[in-house]
Image (tube, rainbow, N blue to C red; front, side, top):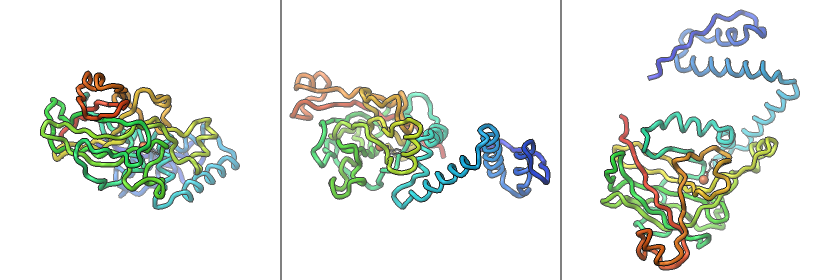
Length: 305
Ligand code: BEZ
Ligand code: FE
């Protein structure tokens, strides 16, 4: 429970530079909930501090209003430009980190992103989810366990990623097969799961709107580091929304939404021959070479209810 309280200073009837925060916050009614009071008095405090720090001209203030208006106008049922703004300012990732503090050793969270679709097809382990045949073949294989290494049979590994051109199926409705590079796998009795896919590549976030323009003005590129998305869940455990990032991606240290965490980076090994495959314990899971392989375990923590 949040035990913080907010002592709102008594303001004045008339606002000036010195009393502005207290004057605005002092207008809040006595019946306002403590959480609302904490949130809104903080918003006012920091907004006023920022305004006093940068001293915007009227033109600059109008530009800020115009920018936020454009962000709103860009939003549709399938495009959320405000979330994109929060993403590129690092706020989405901060909220994610704050809300998923877990013991060391547990798989860490990162951003969900806008391209998750619930109810992807359920497949048997080993299925190839790459339906357009593009890109470099990949095997993803590992276990779902608890913090003590005990397997969690039946845990669901829900996965989605872009194709080799850097687009999700939902962004290319008439180009990619439906459900391309999405699927749900259930962990076996020993916690193991595996599937076939394609090695992920970096790709730009949607940058044809005001957020893309802002990135340009800030001298920033729009690229996300290459990644595969996962939601891993099991009854009695806290579901984890996470990614795996290949360690050879040039954008690892400059992901435009700040979603990379050190514990989520992995080597994607190139398997060139059956000898390589044997050495990695892959036997003859795949007959054609070369392909990439990533070994990745998910560690879940009990849900707190
Ligand atoms: C993504 O990973 O798909 C994503 C995340 C945040 C913003 C845009 C895209
Ligand atoms: Fe993504």
